[in-house]
Image (cartoon, rainbow, N blue to C red; front, side, top):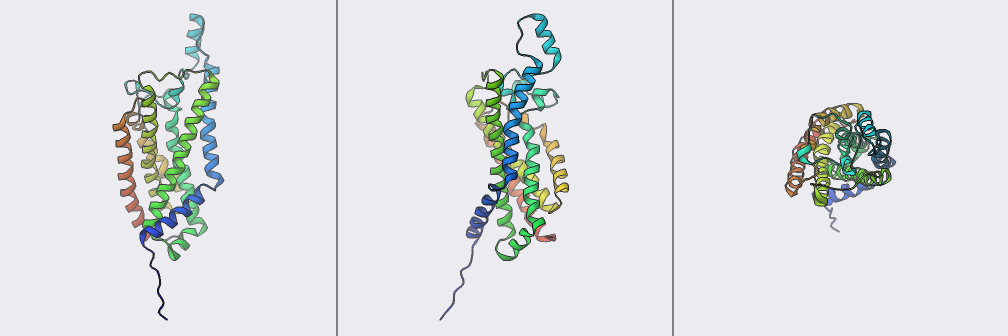
Length: 269
């Protein structure tokens, strides 16, 4: 009797790896802790800064005092971004620093912890020995981490809406329009893949050393942080979305190939 062994191609291996990673990502408590933090952050920021800084005052004296007290949010969508005509990447105010762009630093934490756990537990070494190739692993991790990070951004958006409603802030989109807000969020999700690709490359190089991969990723995030408001303004259009996703794909493909080569050359323990 002739025995035949079925050969697992890239598609089958990749599909299996993707299912495993999605299950591991979306059943871990750490992801939902991160999403919960992202959900609560804008609520606390909008409510507390509005109450401390003061809502629009009735008298000129109160208005001057409130303005001098602190820079506060005057519109809900300031937690998401500013229109391109008002964007100043060098500004250090509350509304320009404490917004959704902070989550690009959170991406480093989620990606580095998720990937480092594979190497620390021995899962990665066993995986490469038994069933998956390096390219399958890299592609699967980048896609799954991007999905997890996108969930954090959506959580922040929901929190911003809730916080704006609780704080009594206006939802007027102004020059951006409702379409601009949607395109802005899509652009920011496109930029997520850029940071995921960079953070995964750092994690692949550092392997089980979470602290090292986080430091490298944070430094890279600081270098790119000032660019984010310029390419994802509140009045973003379809070109912003296309450019952000195109940049994300190029970064992920390029650094994914580098990460795969790194994993082949370095020890997995």
